Image 1 (cartoon, rainbow, N blue to C red):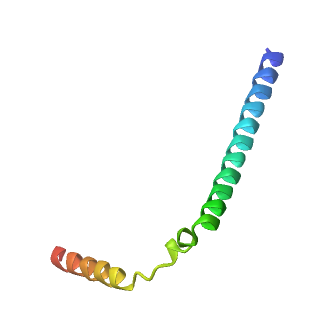
Image 2 (cartoon, rainbow, N blue to C red):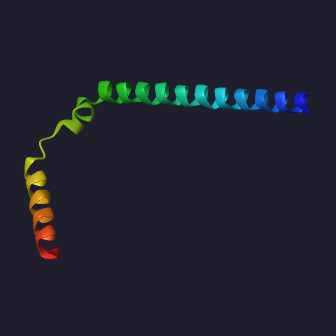
Image 3 (cartoon, rainbow, N blue to C red):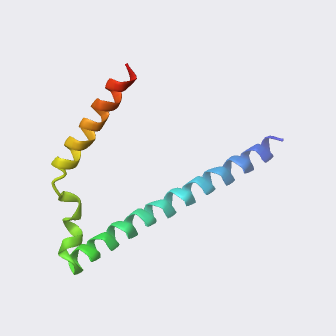
Length: 71
């Protein structure tokens, strides 16, 4: 019985290690592809740095109006 429990623990640890390694490889691959895309097209690298001030103000105003109607 104890041997069976040990085998199960060994298989579980092996499986978790395999998943951890594969997910780590996936993260590295995605980071590499992101860098390649940014190198090929510089506009891709700066896409997340846009100024969204007007959108933020509009969303804040909508939330304020919504909360005012509920009271």
